[in-house]
Length: 305
Image 1 (cartoon, rainbow, N blue to C red):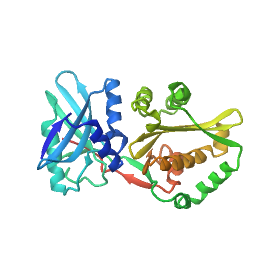
Image 2: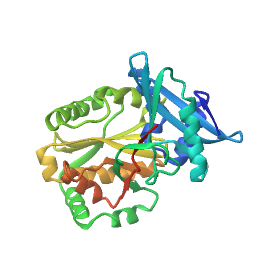
Image 3: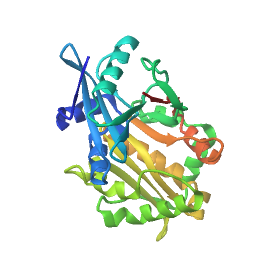
Image 4: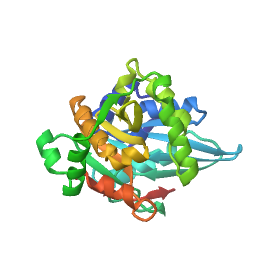
């Protein structure tokens, strides 16, 4: 196994990431956007007998001039079906060759429910849990897979006076939604991607619509709710949601999420990640995500070497 750093072409990375329907954190545009925000990013390709078998994108946090931590979140992207022993060798190659000076630590949060090949590493965080929706089945099957009460709320929203509109990709068209997100985070103590991340990420492609889908539900002339999804290859991740009291009463988010599932599927997206679930702090939101019929995936955890 041999790891090389910052030698893989973006076009090839994007193709591999899309084929795997990889996570947002392993998207090339995610790393490029983090760099614009001042966060160091490293990209590695691991080869076995000269053939690429894994890609890994790390973000780096430096502690003065003497120490640094590199984190590969929801990666690597496995390009081949490797045994645990080979994955262990790939991880070792990444750890040994990371191009950082001084005291350095590597952390991995693999996109796996089992820590194959990470036995020598120390688990420092429990596994992240999310809900994943497979968008490949036909729409009738996706609708039939909705939990009964969730589907009833959708039917009620479809029969209401709510109208759904697509929000444009110019910053002035969606900035109000990010403002609402900032207020929610402050009032509820929530965390997420820096709000400054969204505009450069959305504008990172020649066609910004390739990177984002934002939908708004209106009641008459008033905004009732909105959702934003970031698109990365053949996968998408739910990022921002807001609703007014009227929107909540009319189940606007059920309507918006169902419409988003339809449109994302039409765009060729195969997997929708609804983001983290916390049944203690956000039980209502967790029930909403689980009602979509998606599958809960709890990752193996974060490992330090």
